[in-house]
Length: 184
Image 1 (cartoon, rainbow, N blue to C red):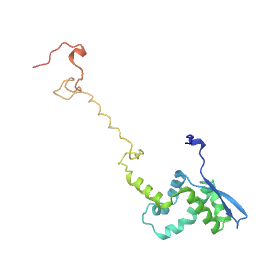
Image 2 (cartoon, one colour):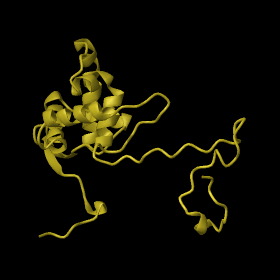
Image 3 (cartoon, rainbow, N blue to C red):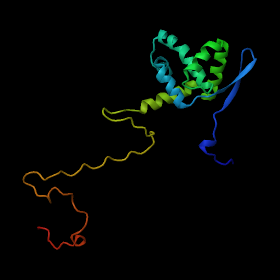
Image 4 (tube, helix red, strand yellow):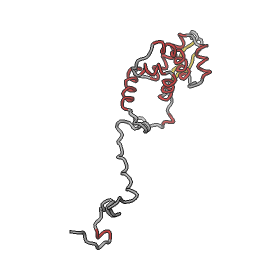
């Protein structure tokens, strides 16, 4: 059995991919969940495709080149770098772009994109946000704490005494040091 390691000891898997007809290689890595979310936010048409929504094919085509270059830049450890995205678009031929994207997809989604999209759809189906409330970020199996009890009223209403509006005591009169008798 291997010893557990720290998260700081982990490194993403990488693969060298030949470019320029094998004259050189680029090191490609898989993308993190945060990087994927950044791309889905930047390219909404692709976000709708990835979770099975409907999208206008022209929107997808228009956003695809930019999305592909952004993905490749991230796969080359240049996430959210506009200069790297421009270099990918200008310096890599389509065949090399496809090979890098394919290698990165294999490193990012070891079981393929379909199972990831299914899990993402399931997770998104479990997320609900009530009006005026932030998103609940607990996992589905995490227990929920009951809401705190409402605060006691500031002052008793007409016709009641402060004792009437107090919560019932859980201690006996002898524990409180009181010698009053309860009315019969």
